[in-house]
Length: 126
Image (cartoon, rainbow, N blue to C red; front, side, top):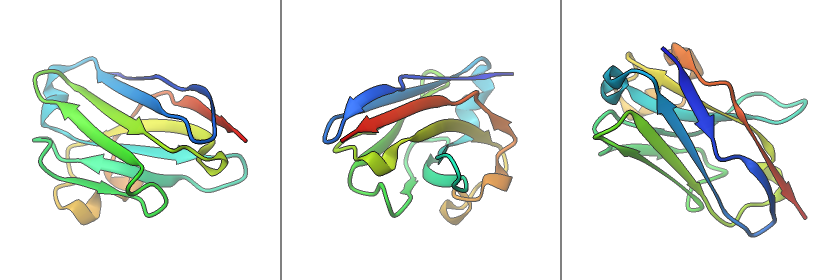
């Protein structure tokens, strides 16, 4: 089972990008999905998480109000729309899937996620 992240790239500050994460197995439609990011020299940071139904989303403090996470319930794919990007958003972004994270407070715990994508680089220039 694989998660394939895509959509990263280079963008100017204030711009937008949309990341996608597609799972190779349709069973992931029943999994909680999350995005994390890691910048050089920094710890992994929670970005956003969404329930299997798509009804519940949570966001990290640094992206709330700028990023929107959604999922296509007909397909095992999630989308992270990132608006008003700034240089502090520069990082490698990883999507992940969890079959154990049930409560929203658990979405931000990377230990809940057993499946990880390969990461996609997002670079924001000033």
